[in-house]
Amino acid sequence: MSKRHRDGDQVLPPRAERRAAARSERHRIATELAEVAEQVSGGVEPDDAHDPAVGYRPIHHKDPAKVKQGRRRRRRRHWKLKMWKRRTATRMTKAKEARLAALEP
Image 1 (cartoon, rainbow, N blue to C red):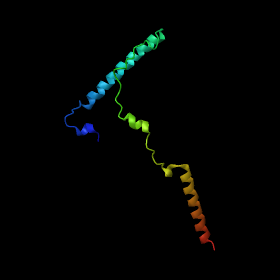
Image 2: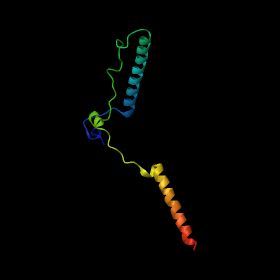
Image 3: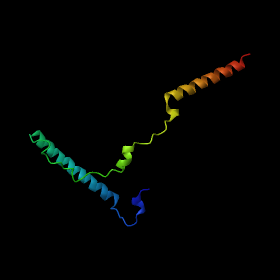
Image 4: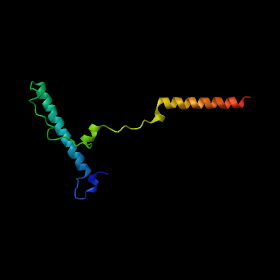
């Protein structure tokens, strides 16, 4: 688990309160962005318009340094590929033919 769960001194507000605060913040930003869009369509230069989300940026859980390195490649699930299914079907057909050939003298 994350360090947040190991630190005893850090007390977080209940989940419902955190979600409510995040929702209200997103709502505030959305309404302000709508106002900015109205201003821009009214003739104000986009560079002169106020960016409402400057003070609020959601915290990303990923470390930017690790993201730049690139994700570790996951192994391909070969049994889900068409090639593997075709191969399995071919092997089953060959085995069936071999059984039939063994029965016929």
